[in-house]
Length: 142
Image 1: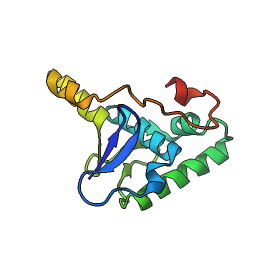
Image 2: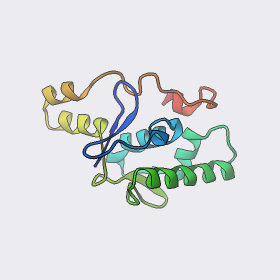
Image 3: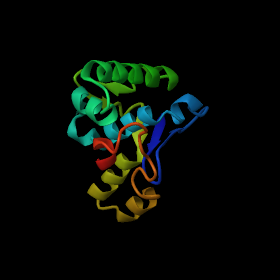
Image 4: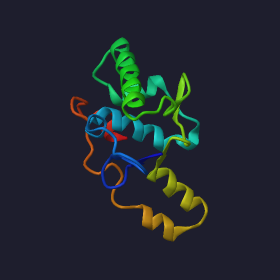
C-alpha cells in the first residue's frame, strides 16, 4: 500500500516495504497528477482533458495527451502497481493500492472526528509545490 501526502508538501511513501524509487518521488508533474486525483477521489474521478490542462498547460492537446499517458505508464511501472489508477476517460486512484492524507482528512471530518483530522493535517495543502514551466497556470491557482 502506498500513501500520498499532500499536507505540508507532496510526497509518496510506502506504508510497508521499500521506499518508492527516487525517480517518482522527485517527479513533480507525476506527483501533482496523483494529488489532483486524490483530491477528486470522492467525485468519481477527473477527466483526461482536465488533467492535461492542469498539469501540461503549455502543451498542445496531442503533446499533453502523450505526456499524460507517459506519466501514468511511469507511475504504474515505478510504483509497481498496474492498478494504481482506475478508469479510461475519468481517472481515479485505486483505494486498494494508494491512500491519501487528504482522503483520510475528509473522512475524519465527515465522521465528526476532529481530533483525527487535526492529527492528519501536518501543514498547508501542497505547501511549496509548483510546476516548472506552468507559467502560473491553472495548477498553481488550483
